[in-house]
Image 1: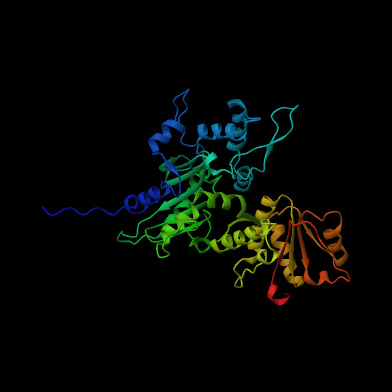
Image 2: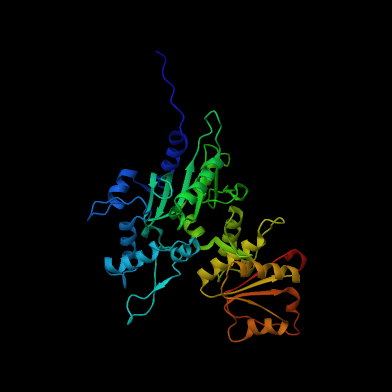
Length: 404
């Protein structure tokens, strides 16, 4: 008898390679199959009840809260009080505040509010990195994800795999469409979601579940790994799901814009991620030669330079600890546009220099305003120059070719 051909399935040609690459030393995720996950993390040991509605892996989350907050989360009871707060949170933006360690909690009336660390951004090995597949969730309908990535027991990325080898040539959009179905049927799966992926053997696109396909993007930069650029799907996985890159995206490169009462979540494109990080790399080396610390970032029209500046400013704020970031434009319309961008994203510590005197006061009074200063080029027209002696002052100039 002739040998039987191996069937092409989503599991064999897409899902399994994704899981295999995630488990490599380069990416560093650990894998447990669904039966292991059910037994160890989704079944109450006291009652033996398996809860398919719960998407948080509570034993991992509880343990990590104690490990990352050893001074004041000293037992399971205290950890469970934070778990209770997280379990009742249904807003993705609020979840991001928790995952960025921006929340505080008071455990007793005679204790101060404490900052809660949910993810360790300094030492990534202090976090738990788990990937599983065929993860069932009960909701309006019962749904099963192809793969699900957890940080410290919190689901953050849902890749959905599709194969191009079937007769109907299913593409990545079918995976993206499926995440929209999950958003409707099992919304708890995405309360803490950073982004989702639609993947086939050729391409990998990432985006926000439920948004139109044209807003989903490819990640074409595998850095810090070396993957041939023609391997588009693998480039996307190694670039996006590298653990340090993923933490950077969660901490610095996701914003929520509110316009006309509607909130829209936006995630950096790989070009914005790369440009902002190059900028930050030069800016934070305060002792380096000034000529090296300067640089130019070139953007085409409509490519999101305002968001690149916003992402860079946010990361600089996190790394330098209350620096002064001056954003300079050369027209009133650009200032209005930038102000609108920053207001819509609820950017904190942001001031507009209303006049030349106001700008001079912001930069020279005391050791200078700590935060973001938005201004227009002509407001620098002073009779006398001023010297800012602090090294942690960064200037971002929009349309620099017109003024420099």
